[in-house]
Image (cartoon, rainbow, N blue to C red; front, side, top):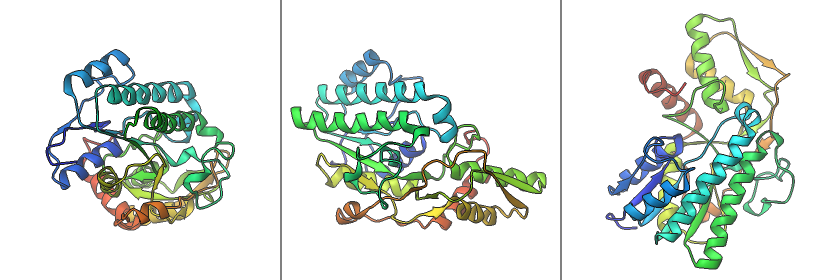
Amino acid sequence: MSPESKIYVAGHRGLAGSAIVRGLQRKGYQNLITRTHAELDLTDQVAVQGFFEAERPTHVILAAAKVGGIHANDTYPAEFIRDNLAIQTHVIHSAWQSGVEKLVFLGSSCIYPKFAEQPMREDSLLTGPLEPTNEWYAIAKIAGIKMCQAYRKQYGFDAISLMPTNLYGPGDNFNLENSHVLPALLRKFHEAKLNNDPQVVMWGTGSPKREFLHVDDLGDAVVHLTESYSDSEIVNVGVGTDVSIRELAEMIKDVVGYEGEIVNDTSKPDGTPRKLMDVSRLTNLGWEPKIPLLTGIRSTYQWFEKNRTQRRY
């Protein structure tokens, strides 16, 4: 890419997309195109085609998706598979059709089998059954990966697929019904502190282990790979270390300053026992994360407290 490249970031208001915009701007890319959902419905094939014909971006970073935690995935399976298949199909096809030079597709660590060998290597894709609570989202993302590979194989389209691990940071979704575990716990501890609640209830046993990447690290990684990587093989984007949900809860409790008790609701599902990524391919491509988890949690909580009107609830 050059500083003049016309870059369309799909999903720029989301957690990942907004960080990618910041990452591009830090590197001097200013010719960025964005559209809100109200301005462009990516599930509308005709609208997407018209957008690409009119704007003719040179590069596309596809960060738009319908996302959510265990509860949302398990409650709205039809929406998760339908909307994500539609978004990625329309954007990838229209990007190729309009002559886009390069497309970056963001998948998810949930594409890997539930009991994949840890840490999860890229070649473990499609080697076993998925986690049942989010298989519809995972299948849609796998289809996106395969579509990028198919368009590269048949048409020579330079489409790459990146698999971020669990993300967190400024602009996260703190809605307790459909958010991911870290922002949900942060909000729970914050409100329990304000209300002087004696305890905070945490879903599951607390034993599953998860890997967390700050979104600004993701933004930098996406820019680095957009500039330097071109291949059909997927690339894991993570930190290569994980913590248990219980350990995460204790860290957030200390950052927030909550002094009550943590209680486990074991009637709620744990999800996949462990999701740790093998990031050796990413490291060999010249990129490593810079923001430690505790530092990232502190800065996220500071953002949460300072941006009351911008929080997504």
